[in-house]
Amino acid sequence: MKLPCGHLLGLRRLTAVCLAVTGRRGVCSAGMRLVQFYRHGDGSGVRVGVEQAEGQGVIDLKAFDTSMPCNMKEFLEMGEKGMESAQRALASGQCVVARSELKLLPPVTAPEKVVCVGMNYRDHCLEQNAPIPAEPIIFSKFSSAITGPYDDILLPEESQEVDWEVELAFVIGRKGKHIKEEDALSHVAGFTVANDVSARDWQMRRNGKQWLLGKTFDTFCPLGPALVTTGSVKDVHKLGVRCLVNGAVVQDSNTDQMIFRTEKLVAWVSQFVTLVPGDVFLTGTPPGVGVFRNPPVFLKKGDVVECQIDEIGAIRNTVV
Image (cartoon, rainbow, N blue to C red):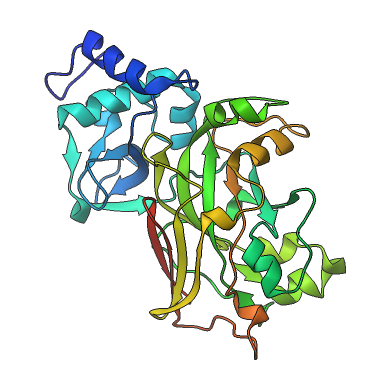
């Protein structure tokens, strides 16, 4: 293995670090913020990196270790080996790219599946006077809807009722089918922020009231800014969740309002499909969406939407 960027931690020291934080995962899960990016003016294309801290420099994993892949999906498929290499890179402090030199991409691109959960916040059900679901309500977006954490949201000509939905998202890191709830977190690589942008006219009145088309226009899934590994988050089900439109808070809740939590969603969906590394889950939105306001409010050209989740980060997208 070629390591062009200087001295690394010894394997023995790294193994000790990983064993201290592995638990049931079987993968080194110490806190990291993993990103996809490309460098301005550099023809090397997409790279995987690890942030030194939120908003600080990014270590280029491919520059640190030439055996590393250039996209997050392939990185996650490496499992423990990839995570260990990222830990070594972070500890080394080598191969750092300044934030001014890079553009952050979605932390995952071209996932096999984008699994979405509807009506998954108690306070969101109360907002629309709807019953609490007895089972998870599952729908999907196409992966072509995914866009970057600071990229534009495109208003489609086909809809006049485009709405915001801040959501906690998580990404699968280990393949599995019929996963038990008690083992579910061992299949989760980490968490990120999503905006489940929704064309309400297509979701609620058109196409037989099936949700897919209203949810999956291009750019209708801003994602990022980083994939925050499970070891970085103390309790993912006790995090503040907010959405701001043009600086005004429109959604303000907490992930403790989730009806079906991460473990349940992994177990439930894996009954039906095999989950693979890179699969993205959007876990539902809290109250405050535009369609249920009186009168309803929808996004227009020039609006700026910011979605925030404590300990995870924020994404900021302009509507064009």
